Image 1 (cartoon, one colour):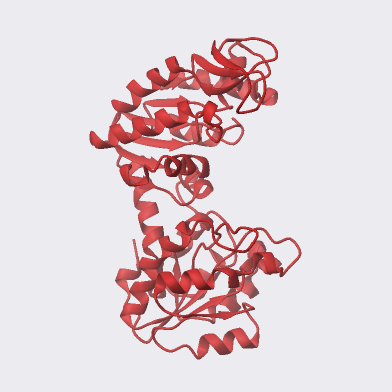
Image 2: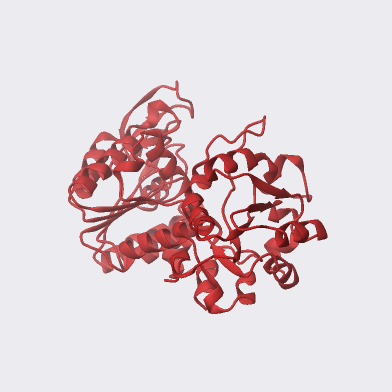
Length: 397
């Protein structure tokens, strides 16, 4: 894998794709700078070599072109502080001023371009737009794993304008790829995948792909009720995708054929309303009364899952076990998180991926007690499903 370590950036200008899609509050202050911090090691390597940097990123989903709400100018202060160097800014990506600023960069200087998604050409993967972006540097570095599954101008197309010796991965991209490789291609068994979240439809491909890899697949979250109903259970008014019942049945049958332990919850914490203060009780997951809904896995399921997790050598977690944002329904997710930590301490390799799983690990302050926390939920899942990503393949070509 070709990383920034394989290049000396002295007197070179690197055009670096980063993922600075950070959350901002109403005052345009960053509320979570994790993604900025994740890029710093790569950027400091280039600066310490004696190179200069042109940064490009997207922020949010602007629909109608440039808007103050999604301007990357709001992150300059935080980025400058993290890098310990003043960051210059171009309020455009490809106009004369932007090119003038990038060409005038001295060694050790950093320029941030305005939001890539202010241009429709970015998401379309426009070749002319990519060619213009490429003129900002003589080395291309992709360190935006969270966007690597997008075949956009700045993540895939731009790479074709650099020869194989002038493009590479940043440290974050390299570590993300290495962590997935440990789970999928260097798997120590038993391998347990924990898959939660609201919808089966979002996770069909990942579950199918994991069938050939995992010994155990633990199902939690709202998606569990589609499986329960598919098997004839009564789920009250729990979340269910009725148009996915046949697919759920097929996944259950496929697991039997492939001798995978597809573990569906046996009990649930149910409530009479989707509210933290609703009436709640434990119930057999196959016999939930009308008017009640399942909002978390129950204690029997938690204990069942716990035994499997603690005996695992490789663990992948994607998706919560319940509505963990509400304190009344967080116990299943919380216990799963601490069980993964316990297994990690016993020598298991644990990979946490997907926004809600990462949010849960962070909520319980456990990020430093698992093996790896992925920055890209969609990219992680697609990498496991497809075996590569557009942004990864583009560097390797």
